[in-house]
Length: 98
Image (tube, rainbow, N blue to C red; front, top):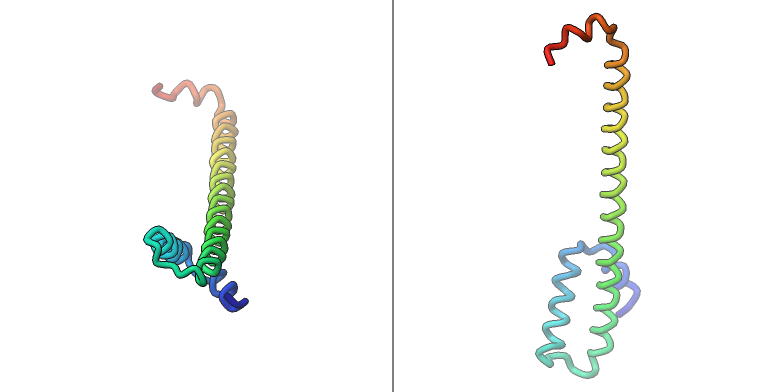
């Protein structure tokens, strides 16, 4: 494949990449790949695997960042609530029904 194929692989979605991988694997398993095309198909599959791996790693990093951000917001809110509770004068705190 040419460099334009590499550029196309970078732009395709994860689902399209996995669909193409399944096509390649299916053809290989059925013996439908001519020996002259074998190396080309294996190279394409390797590029697609790397693309999928990188998309998964990127998604994992983004999810972790979002989760950490949410956790820090929850902790900040909890810390703020704790400070608010400490600011309640003891005589008012006795009126709390629990």
